[in-house]
Image 1 (cartoon, each protein chain N blue to C red):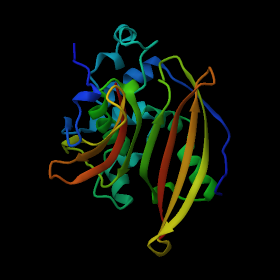
Image 2: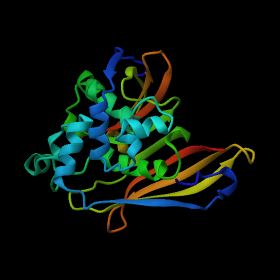
Image 3: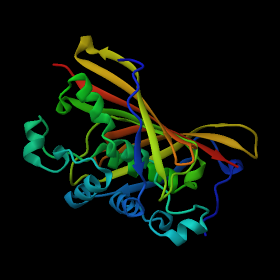
Image 4: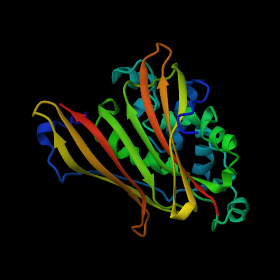
Length: 142
Length: 140
């Protein structure tokens, strides 16, 4: 499984979705809610907050794809770690293209826990590299 | 207008302005579920959460991480954040107050352009660590 790359996925970054997400996380900075404020701050449209790239992966069902692929019941898994590396802003209207790979797998506690590490590269509609995500999924085996 | 944070003004050990959210309520969890695409019922339905060995519905880890990110976006423009990550250390529950803190641990580079490393932590009202993270910020 290590090294396995999943099919590329495409996600539209919708303005309404970004506003709804910003409100849900209690964001009050107007650049995340108002187009005019975003433009004044130098963005082409409302920017995606720092954790939003994971929403794109969720939208494309990426974390569950891996569990299903390995025959793991999702109720035995938890999100252990999440890391983002940022290259370019993601804004409303972007179309993200991502690809997830399994980069590492290891057991801990004598095999009671399996750690699955994935990396997802995200590009925008201009093929610009916007973000890399690293996700650690922890699976309880007992 | 907020005064921009400059590399020259930042010293190792500096605390970033903290961010507190809460008490986190069920409406917020529902709104987060809808807008994040994480519809897992363990965040919305106590019965399902209990059937999965939890004491009740739990707060989405990615909601707590979004709160933690506001320590960074409240300090510098988001464009200056190079990386941001966290470990999910323990679970938060509806009713919890979640306080997010950051402290500068390193500053690399010359005076005009520095990469600043920050340790981040989210804790509940009992002072228990929910998230243990870090970030890298570019300052000019």
